[in-house]
Image 1 (cartoon, rainbow, N blue to C red):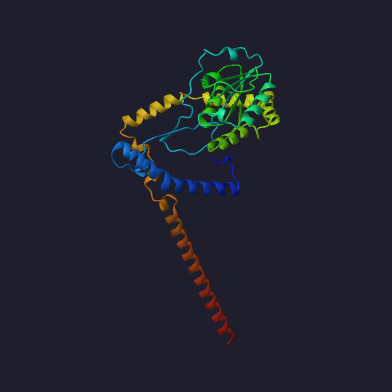
Image 2: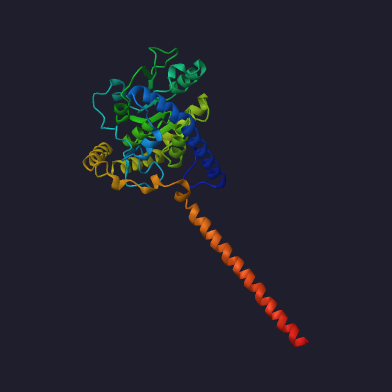
Length: 327
């Protein structure tokens, strides 16, 4: 969730470690116990989340190669990022078909409502949109908004993948949620991000790092126009996004087909225990090789002590012989 690359300096690694430890403590002492109470109430028997975690047969991971940083994975971790995606339908709105200068899609996902943005923020956005030659399609949760210019269309609900798949859509203004980011990659649409919380900041960091989008630093008319025009007018953003989209599509099967295959594979082979790493069953000191490290330290200490004692003994022998010769 931290906005860091996979090439962290010391302080970034330090923050990453502290965040990881804090997250593990939170899950172990707060989140998992609450989930166990809820699950036990619905299933009618006591549920042990830690036991479930230890006995996982397969993990379907929402990872997209090319966007997410490379990472070592066990055989039972299957990357299926984007498995919810499918080609856009072509029953598209006249509003997008008539966008001769291109269109911009603006949506903040399901957790942030555009109609709950401060009124002054809404008006600043509309003011900026009114100066654009492109049409703007805005997912807005109420019927109307005061001061809406002619080039802006609002709708309570929009088929996001169909909109992003329209050839006239040149830019996606997004909260940078993971699924929305994957959808933009799938259809090759550059992004201007307005993140709000959690992984959205890290996703935006990665978007900027890959050169497939930018961000609105603060909601002012000038900043909004600058961010939009920079990404639309600089062809490198669209070119980088097309290249990233090509990487996404360059797979032997779709992510959904992969998820189905490996799910059925696990069922066919009795839980596929041969894919499960024995590291899951190791105590932490064995997993981190602390016992091996301790033995090596003891051996090193013993050898060092023996060398010191031997050196002292030899020194005494030499010194005694020297004294005898002098006498």
